[in-house]
Image 1: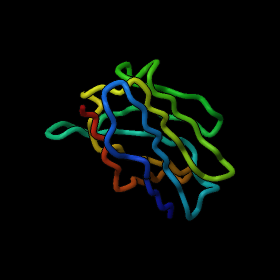
Image 2: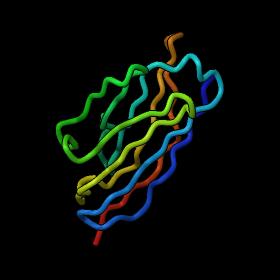
Image 3: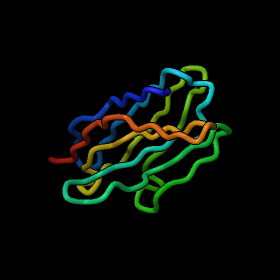
Image 4: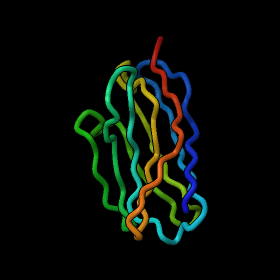
Length: 116
């Protein structure tokens, strides 16, 4: 079992920055790929970015060049640095963690609101 907790959400102005964190606990030595997803009101949950245990990254086109995903395997923590925020980045951001045993674990999400 892996427990996942997101933090760092809040209110930011357009053009501003926020840094999200995702802390994993439990059977952390089984963690492989980690990822950020987001769900805006009335919309489906979409991929934002993923990072493998080896550090390979993948981004949604909408965030390329603005967001940076990273992880600290010693701290079992993943980050999402969000710069040049836009109104359309407003959403609940979720962390998803994959286990080498085939399971996936979600956090409860953290709300990001971009507004002047």
